[in-house]
Length: 197
Image (tube, rainbow, N blue to C red; front, side, top):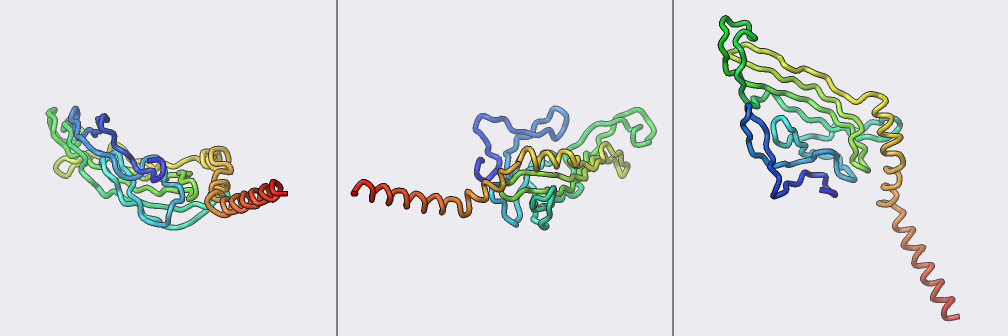
């Protein structure tokens, strides 16, 4: 949605996620997808998580600056969650035999978002994520990562992509419309006076 930034489901879209190999589970998008809304508030938003195919409460945690620009920070947490099952060789768990076993696929995630509040742009996103298989207490970690934007990406986002947009949008929602309106009234009055004279 252009105003709220919340995902919109279309009637002809086949939205799904893969719980297991070749097993499509229909789903409906909800929450924020690619950005925060214009005029972001210090509140809790629902943010879509692709892996669990649902929105996660993402709370406002503070205000900071990046490259001299004010940012709101938001955090969300997905605890260890079973997101499907997978047949994997027993040997990967250190078990004897060549047969496959059906293991639970787990996911957990913690993300901090740095949002420019006027535009709702994500300027940085710091994610600690982990995926693993579990079979009868035996675990195999498949992904464990700390992901963040580079300093150069943050700098480019603030100075090149955003540029003076936050300032211009702030003026457009603040004093600028009032000044323009008053100036318009003055010009109309002046024109009326000239025409009568």
